[in-house]
Image (cartoon, rainbow, N blue to C red; front, top):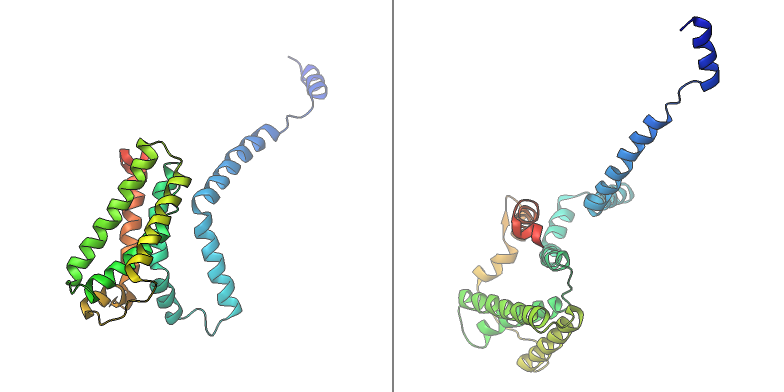
Length: 218
């Protein structure tokens, strides 16, 4: 092919556009960005909120006291959220979780103050009660084929009624052992102990979902 022929072909076709390459690059970046937001969106939002409030309240917010307060007060909510993540991953809902926490709190104190049980026995009983309620929810949803929204709302209502019956609508007040209070109130390396519970459960849930068949199945 002569130079004149090559020049004529170039004029006829025009210069080759880099758009297909750019489009392919954008096609790879956008799904990756969406995946990043989907997986780490809440974490990124939390970081942005910390940065925003640290800028807004530089003297009071970015302090060790604030961090300890958040780690201590929100650890229970974080544990409940991790439990709910497992249910939601299975495509179900658990509306009884708040009621279960309520009766767990009531029994943990009432079994010690009213019944005189040791805190270890009271804690074990509370765990069994929670497991029994969870099993009831599972049977209603999986065996009886009742919608999880309705089943867990009904279970929660019954649990709430039992809580009112047990307490008589009044607070249970009495002395509690220091060891029992240390479960939530103690600190390790200056960090509230409940934060370590959340860290341990978070790692276990993450490992289960990412690397174990049961997590993939859910």
